[in-house]
Amino acid sequence: MKSILSIIEEISQNEPDATWISHKTFTKNTVINNKNLISHFVIVADGIIHLEITRAQILQFYKEGDMIYQSPYDINVHDQVSIVCDTDTKLIFVDREIFSDFAANKTEYMEVLLKSVLKNTSDLCLELMKHDLTVEPRITYTLQKFCDRVAPTLHGEYQEIPDFLNKSKLAHYGNFSRKSLYDKLDSLEEQDIIKQHNQKLYIKTSAS
Image (cartoon, rainbow, N blue to C red; front, side):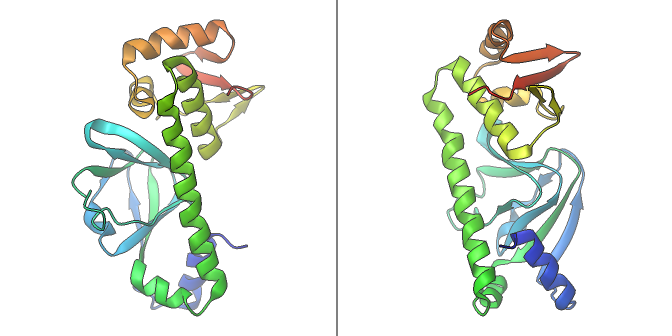
């Protein structure tokens, strides 16, 4: 089955006048204006972004091929959530209504859209499960789920956490205090679950 990204690329090639699809480039740390999502959904063409709520609590990361379909205006949270670029990023904005009309005549397109929406919902539910854990297993779970999403560089049996997920941002992502994080990282390192070297963080691939 095609991906949502490949479908948009296919439409852009076959429908050159499809002005309802726009490609935009953003630099690292840019906060995307939520007004872009009033009538459009967004697909990550390149880079990493994340969705966060008030007080910088990070909900979920999105990589190439992922999408955010629901408009924050539809559920009245546009003043409580933000989309932030963790790296230089290329995003595709697609008019939600026009795409739905377009996909209505192509079963494959609609199936891919629904599959992408369901995957996002499932991934978010898995992210939220970490809040039921105590701090130490929550750190491990948080880092492992992050690695599952962004597929970082592998060094032997350890995965390297990208620089953009520094310890401050990790604390916001896992919803724990910096003090608790620093204390537990030392404990996890003693257990060989994580490694800290040259200001970089690594997690064992078998950690859970």
